[in-house]
Length: 149
Image (tube, rainbow, N blue to C red; front, top):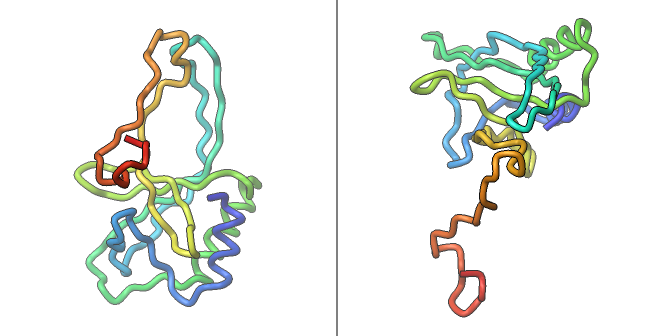
């Protein structure tokens, strides 16, 4: 999800809720403790220099259970960020405290703010001679005689 898409989403909602992929919600008394513009320069294992920029929200749960962030307050935070870093088409990630600080991609299928799990990946598999990954199939996803298993 890009930042401008999040802004549009907030214009059309009465309540700000974040959902995990499994359907559970982040407690509604969350705070946004950071809106950051992140720039990352790195060398991948294939010796290619890469650069990327993205937005990062940090969600925090405090003990103020009656706190609610309104859509207009959230839009105001985003607008202040855009005044400093004008990148409305960059992707949004979310930090949230789990066992450690967890990072999620932000997606919005059917108008819901979904925290999508992130995964590590090799960016240059041909340089590392890695075998092509096969899809992981639990069997529960295939219908009998469908040919997908």
